[in-house]
Length: 402
Image 1 (cartoon, rainbow, N blue to C red):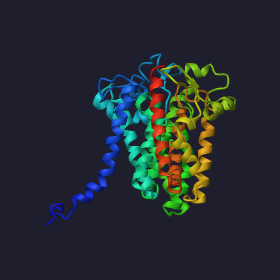
Image 2: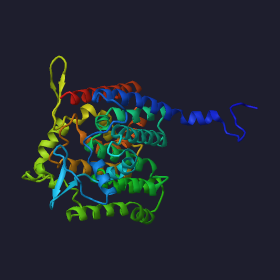
Image 3: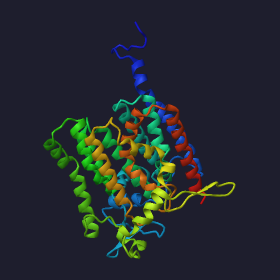
């Protein structure tokens, strides 16, 4: 009897082969994450807590039966409204913190949690590539590049309140894309959670609708019913939560920050578009000294420089491997999200590269998979991946030692 087969008839070799790619991805990602964390901060433990922790504080307040915060340290972005202090960020990251607060108190493992969500996104991107008939080696290379060769890397190891929203939102949106054809209820629900991290993920809804229709072969009426009871309940809860805090269903608190009250044009305005467009697409780094050969601008540097795989993905949205309806929906949603991001006063300040590019990366990942299927030059792709990882590790070092 073959020793590789158990009494139940299970071939352990098949199980090993099934999970081997995930083990390799986990091993490589852990080593890269540990290297990045070493650059970002001299850590004492992988369980360290980041002090920019509005979501931890919010979770503690909820457990005490309050929606406002007990304290408002000056180094945090805390909204002041009607004599009370509020967390000025969407609530999903705070919801994630609740069980951690019960386990760890106010010292939740911020950095480790960011990494674990990044690993979930890593696995989901890999599975999405395989699902779209990409070779497993390229699916693994692509998924690693999207985590460690884009602005995702810096946010993942920063683990502050700004990074938490972007990493969780990115992961949840990727999961939505991954499961839309087989688990549509789950996909729409996790997209609603992503909206509670970064509100512009709401604009991804029509894209998931199109994917659901063409990949899942479901009729529009059935899709609408699924959206109504799996996506909108949590979005409505967010709106009611905002209404209860600020008497406005779409106000998360940023309008009531001390710095935002001083803005002549508010947080979002067409007045910011020219400057943000320049820093997002045109601005290049300057030459530095002997130890810092490239210097970047805190308002943003042309995203292509450190997100080339995202740029490849945007170009790949025109690939014939995607149906024209999917291509059209993807391009329209990407343009809509990016236009809204370009209206934000800060444009991601203070940053390396373009931090807000993370919010369009899930759609770009789909395009990158299509591009890799039609672009056969393996050496070029590997060189691009290697450059992406190297430039983002340099950017992390640059940002750390400002």
